[in-house]
Amino acid sequence: MEADIDFKRAAIYCLAVGAGVGVIASIPILRLPNICCLWIIAGGFAAAYLSARDVMEVEAADCAIIGGVYGLIYGVAVNVATFVVNLPLNILGVGALARGFTGGGVLDRLGVHIGLAMFGDAAVAVLNIILGVVFGCVGGLAYAALAELAGPKPKPRTPARQAPKGKWKARD
Amino acid sequence: MLLAALSPPFLQYAGMGSLTGYAYHVFSRVCHQIPSRSPALLGGMVAVCFRCLGIYAGLFLGCLFYRQPASGGMPKPHLLLAAAFPMAADVLLESLGIYQGSNWLRLATGLVFGLIIPFYLIPSADKAGNRLMLFIRNPT
Image 1 (spheres, rainbow over the protein chains, first blue to last red):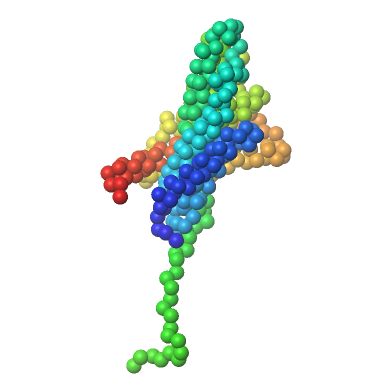
Image 2 (image 1 turned 90 degrees about the horizontal axis):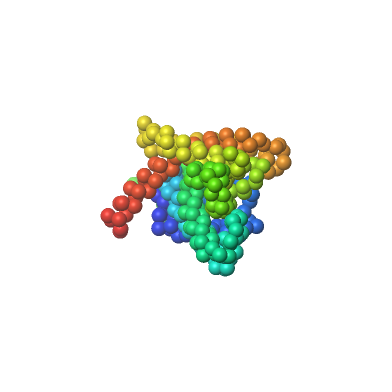
């Protein structure tokens, strides 16, 4: 049991959880329609739990920071994973056509549409990172709140001095 | 973010309808955008649902009205759970089919949740900045 969070170890947990959840959340079938930000909040909670599970008293701001760092990594990971999926479609211009452009002369201005699709993806990337940080923080804070409700963890017991084997005699 | 979410109906109204597709695409990653659950303005659909709009509006208002508590730091984390509870209950009960929520309730519960977030986010960002500065000055 430690007194304070080890931020180097926490960074590794944030990286692992952020990359994992980012890749999972980029799979369309796993995006739950009714709870849009569930993956982000759950990941922030998990990162804070993993980082602070061995800590005696958890500080809410530390958990929020861990959640925020996780959210940042999540945002980058989900963008990279989505980019890999969308890249072939964007090169072919299919992404531009699929994203609601209904004006005439599409093939004449294909470059413009591809550019707009790329701009749309850049905007999505920024939004993902902002929302990742905000809701990752919320996840970390949710863990801090639950940890506080559960009360402080017991202090580690110092090993008791062993009595010498055999018949013990008091000193004179 | 709030302005970007609200932009599609206005873009359509201003005769830039071809750009609305991109605005919808931007928010499609973070919101289901079901038409029956999304607000409509000037005859066009907003890019996010009532709940997400409530959260974004709450975030905006929370940042606008943020004042550091007299005790410093941030409020107890329980307050965040309390603010999230109505929204979580609404989502859960609706997902289980126990009741059919209304759009205004989704907006209101999202707004309450979003409103409280800056009171945690801003002090956390402040503390993170301080830690980062300390780390830069003394990396060991």
